[in-house]
Amino acid sequence: MMPSDPQKGFRENADLIHVIQEKKLSRRKLLMSLGRTGAVAATGLGLLASKGFGMQSVPDAVYDNAGSNADPRIDTILRKQGHLWIDLEEDFPVIPPESDDTGRLMRAVAHIETSGTNNRKLYLTKSDYFISSTIHIRKRGIQIIGLRHGRPTDPSGKTEGGTRINYTGTGACFELGEPATEFADTAQGFTLDHITLTSTGSTRLSLNNPMAISAGRGNYGAGTYGVKDNNNGNVELRNVQIERFEYGFWGMYSDVNTFDLVNLFYNKVGMFLGLACSQNTLRELYTIGNDTALWIKGASGLRVQDCQFVKDGSQSSAPIIIEDHHSPYDSVFFHRCWFEAGSSHRLDSFVQISCGANAEPSKSIVFRDSCLAIGAKVNGEPICKYFVRVGNASQVLIDEVTAFPHNLKKLVAFEGNYSPQRVTFRGCVDWDYGDGFMDDKLGTGEAKMITHIYTSEGVVFNESLTIKKPSFVHAYTDVNQPVSAGKLTKIAFSSIRSDHNNEFNPLTSSFKAKTSGIYLITVFVTCRQQLQANRMKLSIHTANSSTPLVYMDDMQSESEFISSKGTFPLKLNSNELFDIRVFTEKTVTIQAGEAVTYFSVIKIS
Image (cartoon, rainbow, N blue to C red; front, side, top):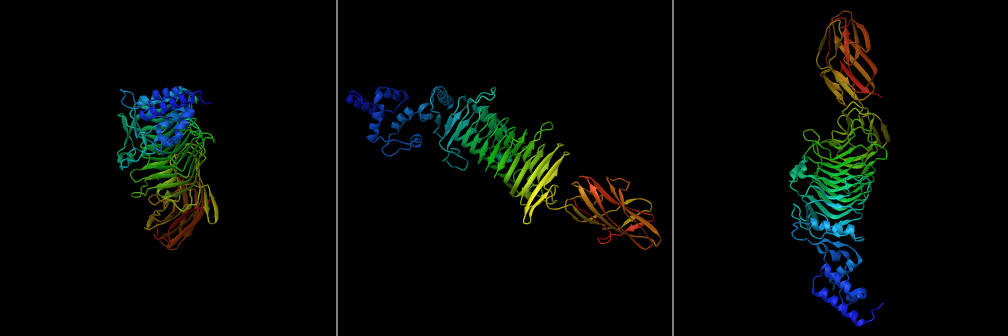
């Protein structure tokens, strides 16, 4: 409805134009102006637009990009009428004697939480902010949005970076909810967008990661958290970088979170997902130089997609740790990820799966289409020994790995005395380890490595621990060996022609099976003796027993050379050993030579 006095309306519009053009608007004067114009505001602002004070988009107004014939102060009025966003610089200035940005950021958050408005977007448009104490978030849906992604400046000299919050305090920089409240959900929907968080406080501890140390970022803020979520969830981090905290992100009962294009650099723990942190999604995460990049302790339904874990970990900590992961629904799914171990430091394993002696086994952990960028061995020693170290876990699947798995010592290590433990590998294997095994058993528990190998001839299914090479040994005697009459003497097969899996010890002339199964043993022994009747027996002895398990041959001869031979299938358990011995009634000399005294073993089942 038009005012009863049109001239009065135009006069009030002219007053408003004068205020806008001649003076920098304060919040108080703006509100007074809006109040004075009253019902004329809508038509008056439309008139201003028609006179050449054009409209601006949200990004143009926030980032001060003036359009054609535009006055950004007009858009300030429209924005505050429409409750579109809050500009920290404009709406909440520093109040003396404040020396940093803590107070005004607290005031802005308090305004969002108490004003009852739906205006929940807070823009930070400077390059650097300094926060000295925790910013508590106690209500839903608060969004803090920066200028753009990346540091304002970085060591390479680039200066086109974004908004950085320098946290100089201890504890959490942003804390969602209250620690003592479980399943409160009071601060769901917290968002950081285009923000870098950096811990710059004076209380520092040293990292163990050599990459961080060599880059001059070898310490972190003791007791600090970039974002700490107590029992809320629905957290969104987009284009966020978190550096040099004890915990970059820490969550407990923090579910349905989304982390897109997040960088975790030089933290003690980049991301911790604790109990009941279910249905979290990590997309294009990039980590570098953290002691531990990702620590999963009881979280479930985690999806890690297209992420890069680069030069994290140390000799004392794995880049990725998975603990207390029990039911089949507590899945962790890694898909199309890059796992890189550099040449500057050594790792025992890239992924540590361990729940402790009294816990249920971890289950449903999947690594699919993984790229293992493992540095080359140094003096024959691997930079990273194992891709996955399994302690008390089953239903672990490694579905195809590429790049440089052969630079590992083995793909998998089983530790502890847990029962049962199981890892399944599926893939097109074009790499192999020297002994033919994909895993090491480092404990006394039950462990099974199951392989599904895709070949040009179809799928090869194998439940043994070997992938390509069965057990095969060929050894012989290269020095004549005298044998006394009347006692069993171990034959010294001192030279090895073949030993695929390092199971034969030429110093003790004993074979130690690495896997349980049936082994076919063949022995041929030639002795020289006096021209007189003599009897000779050939026997197998297990576990260094003096009693023969079985005689392979028992023969007599009066010739100068006497030969004994035999073949026998022997069932052995894992780590069980045996040797070959000879008994003769007269003194003889075992003849050296690969063709006359030899020994072979092959696993047939």
